[in-house]
Length: 362
Image (cartoon, rainbow, N blue to C red; front, side):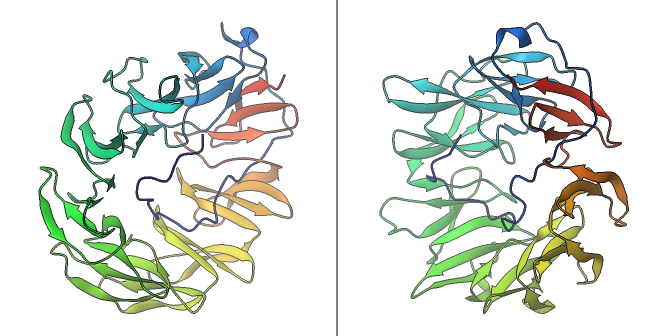
């Protein structure tokens, strides 16, 4: 489902990892459920929170790791960020508003609130930013509105603060605490929120300029970069003159500007690209997995999806091939399983490469 961009987007990584895919040449017995024969097709997506979305000719639902449908496929859609902090998000069509609206459910399919929302951000630190009738506020995991609909736009809480945009502030971003109090105002146009004690901010002049502020709103690292992402493992990727490097929280360059693409750190390593090849560095800037792959994703569950010679497989942090480069399409591991797809079926493999379930395309 394509989400409208009415909340601040989280720049959690460079888009060099989108929808990598793969399909196994192995065979497996198709999982039979009491629902499966009722549908024209069953299309699974990655697991999160122990469940995975499936698309059928009757709607969207959720399956468990045994292939059993636990949330009936009766929803219009399920967004890609459907799970956060024990809560699932699904969508249905609102005939009055004439567009899809979002609702939150638990793992039994029970709504945590009767309210529906025009847009949302996933739960973070116990609260979710939600939008309704043109204004944004926050709900808790019981579905209670804890911060009224009062903001033009709202972002997620990180390290106790959330970026918000208020009417009358001419597009400037401010920060609130969980009580809804304005902690400080800024003269910046955009922020993704705090990570590692600092928040990336952007100012719009003749061109975008990026820097970092502290939790008092003071500019700590000047807005001198062409692009930037948040801090992780003590470093933040920043761009200058078309090349990416990394700085520490004092603004000192730790990794020189040499990469064509870069990402934040995930499971201790960052994904980088040079001369069209991908590899990984540690937070000292050491290349720990050489830039040799045609594409890669971050490490998830200690394995990274990588592409070599036109095929996808999985490597560990020692660059050992754990699952052979045999797939034509696949996705990274989540909750211990990775999705694959072939011309005739969808399915899931475990971390040893065993096919656990398949769904025939119809």
